[in-house]
Length: 85
Image (cartoon, rainbow, N blue to C red; front, side, top):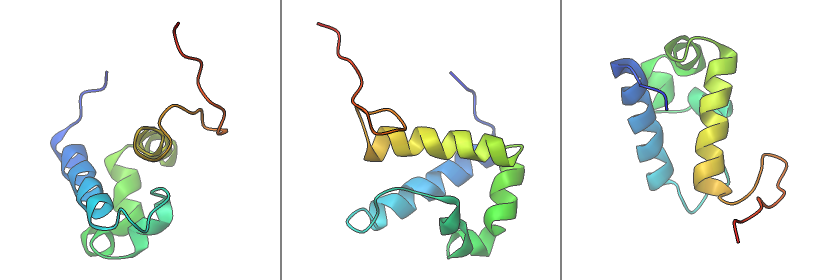
């Protein structure tokens, strides 16, 4: 499990608040969301990439977030995960 630093926690909380406020309209959270407020007001996509160390780091975080919130029980390709029986 990853330990988040203060800046990462702050950005993750902002993302979560954005998702909660727009839940009925979102099918996922993508880097495109960083060009609109509130994210554009706090440095946008560039700041998000810096916060998570690289574009790959940000992508991993967003993939995990999307997997957990928008596609629980599936893989990135949309296949269902096997269940323990």
